[in-house]
Image 1: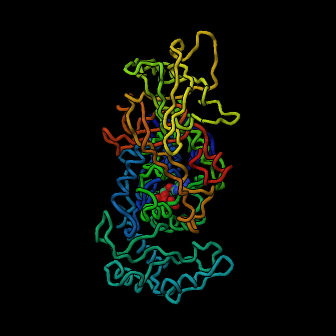
Image 2: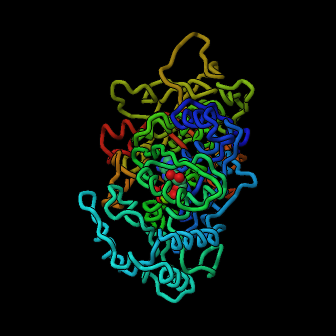
Image 3: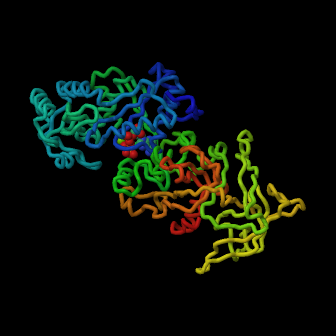
Length: 568
Ligand code: ATP
Ligand code: MG
């Protein structure tokens, strides 16, 4: 059941309407759902939608939601993934309590039910090579043809199936198929495979088995064993539903679950497929499953996205529309900003520093100024920030020759330093290469705190840090992994990667108060965005990840073309 933290308000949708109708008609007296990941990769934000739906529905109807690992393919599944999935579901704010299950817990029963089908003349062992079997299944426009092994009698089928289990045959030599209808309009009913031979070590059952049930044979039966009432899955399983029902109808299962489908979550500039994400990790295109650019829950967490923002987002997307659609990543970023705006303390950090010396401020002087921690939250209070003779400001807050519309610092111009003073640029110091290396300014001591006594106004307020007190830090800016809004996962996915997805700034300086933040604690760097400390930071080597920029820089990038990302 969902924890308190995840107590999100439910909208109405067709899934909840179906459940209401089932309860009203007495078809169910309780609501039991499940989230059934295959442990072959890390969970991504698409899974968050399925997790939210299953757990929040169970919570609303005072039922329960199981976490069930669909671990029927030992060649791709690993304990690392099982552990990561449990960690991520908990982090997202949901709890399965004592209802943790594995499809592999049911291997004995599933095997018995396979024999049950054989005895009823409803399943047979097929020796056809895979390729021939595929051809004989026909196509959407062409009926399939019966396998020459389809009419094997029950004793022969039982004998062969038992020998499959005993390990007498190599991988792929034989399969067990349901005997349904090779001319069905639904390809899934054309004698689907129920068991295949896989000589592989399973993370939980070791080498006990060398035959494994397919998804179709394991899923509905696991639902029935656990008393799941509403088996909610994504739309690609819609065509499997007749098979799901056929198996439930033809087996002595202890309950009658029903499957309902909802649309998958897709996001622009993102891929949400474990196969594609595995390719990125294994090919070294990202630095692991928790790379902050990844749409995995582990990646989003490391990037600083709060679990509550993910819950809020997937709930907003909801399941109102049944059709698949692509949600603009900007909507996700909006949910993140909206939450962080309320909770993240404001700090000052200079990403690309330019030295600013205040000529008329004592070189050995210094003072503490008062800064507001969060204008959205009075309870967050204030802090003091050190000021001095030498400061750093943002390099792109100065232009020697400012175009129309540029209001920040320029020669001869006066601006406000946030919470500090008005300063005027008097002199521009350049190196031999002609690059600006320092600005010499004067300050007006009567503007302490940021306001002039004479009512004089300035056009810009800049953030800054004091050179003597600021801490060096590395700041990592992330942009979308993919340049195109809808990357083609069937095509050259690697070729579509955004070469500017990570920009690492190693010269940054952050204010003293940031020395004590912990990973995962959100902060806003004024005028820049929301950031959090990377878990791989160490004292003396701070690394901050940008969770999200303050404004939607992507809209701009799209307008100018991806090459200009670094200029935004
Ligand atoms: P992928 O396609 O990424 O490999 P999957 O469907 O194979 O995902 P599973 O581990 O089988 O991954 O998924 C567990 C559950 O999560 C399933 O019920 C599936 O329907 C759901 N799910 C997976 N991806 C999405 C998504 N993008 N949006 C909504 N639900 C999803
Ligand atoms: Mg799957």
